[in-house]
Image 1 (cartoon, rainbow, N blue to C red):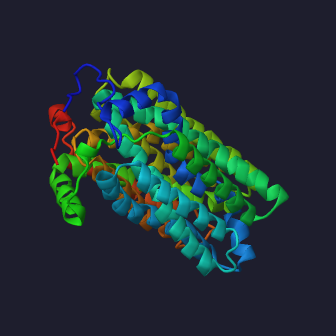
Image 2: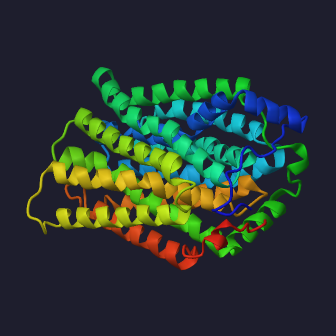
Image 3: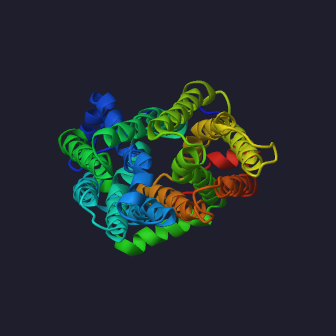
Length: 432
């Protein structure tokens, strides 16, 4: 594998289901389009989550359910995305990227449409679980395609590019969700998501080439997939980057899950104001992600950049906890929003570098490696989601506690398992 100081590698030799050179040529000719498609697939989680966020208080009233139960609709979707990746990732290593991706998108469209007609919160939770299971295909296969096409520093830069494209979704989605609530109810949000999923499936069907050559596919079934995953998990730095990214994502998702209630119920903001603040925070995440990809990568080691991002996340979470417990007296929305902006922005350095550093350690079974990365993040995030609501929707303390604990655990995993002072260790492949 490439070391941090190595020259920037370009596109990896990838191949399609029929002939390798044809697929590589197609991927290069349609480079921008493929990038946009992968960005759209990466945007599946924020589209599924964030467009729905401004309507959470309305769902509690419409379905006569407590806030903690309605937050389970987020948890169910997240849990589905976590478990679905464990299935779809190895499937894509065996059958190629296109077929599992198209099947997942088809189910996603159906499940999202059913969410729009859910008569009870229990059925909404079930449909959201199915939506997450199917939506996992886009997440895990997008990362695997990047690993098929790129390596080393180029891969880290591409992940930052995906953050720019995928970052448009969390900026626009809550704004769209807030505007949809002006003309219809929360069910209209799922109707829009259904159309988005259908359009993405059509574009993938027509324009996304196969990137995994038939010769590189695994034919060992479940046993082969489990063997590959065991090999990856046995590699301490890979597991360290995986857990670091997972717990950092938990801090982020604690914000995603609790902020609609914190901003609207505690500080009295309107759904439109919440959507605007959420969009500003997402701009921070995207901007820092671009600084990471365009300025830092290739000049500063990925480990150093990632460590700086984690330090900012810990500092922001600490400030939020102090403010929410009244240490600074009664504070308004502005200081809380500032701390949340800092936390979200730091994710622009932390998350793409964690993914790139982990994937650098495997030359084979990119689908399985991507599945482990995604599943760990979503499972840890799914655990964090209900914890932020255990004290009701009138205090921000649980959100701040979950964020700080998650950030500290992420930092501990990074320092204890990834050995960031030894950049050569981070660059050597695990070999799977």
